[in-house]
Image (cartoon, chains in turn blue, green):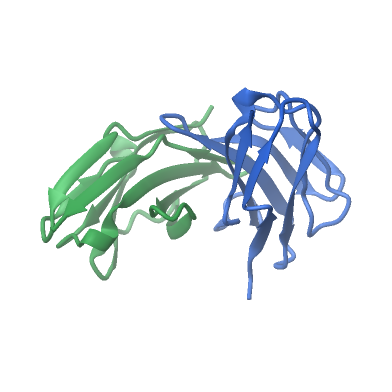
Length: 112
Length: 113
């Protein structure tokens, strides 16, 4: 089944403790991206990647890191999480930017 | 810069009513793509439709229909004979040919029995 898999689905952590949210797709898509969703703000892009080893900042990159060492994986790293990073996070992939996007199931992160 | 505006924050209807969700976009590109996604209470994002800028034909899929008008930069979504299961947040989104997906802030649709 074609899908984007994110883990974990839910995570509660403490301020400053490094964490990684994993994202993997099995569709051989070139393009992957991370979004965060906050009430009243919709979905905002954090980082995106056009291909392996090519990443770029989205609208709200501060406090996040990403890497794209393999085509299928695009992990989101929070080196020192803060409470304002409490949010619902989505990973997405597509064959190219204008193609249909497949989203993961989401990761609900709470930073206390 | 690309921008998507969904002016309706929340809409409440009674089952079987028709409802239209508005979407207005801004882009300088001649090639772009428009999308609608549904987010039910369970939280996942469900793809509904993709339209490219060269195809202005309206589309109908069951109770769903989409009206794309380049002249007004709008891509509106109509649900005919709404059902309780249609209750969700609906997002309109835009992607230019070489850029990323930009979402509107979403419209929450509440369909009561």
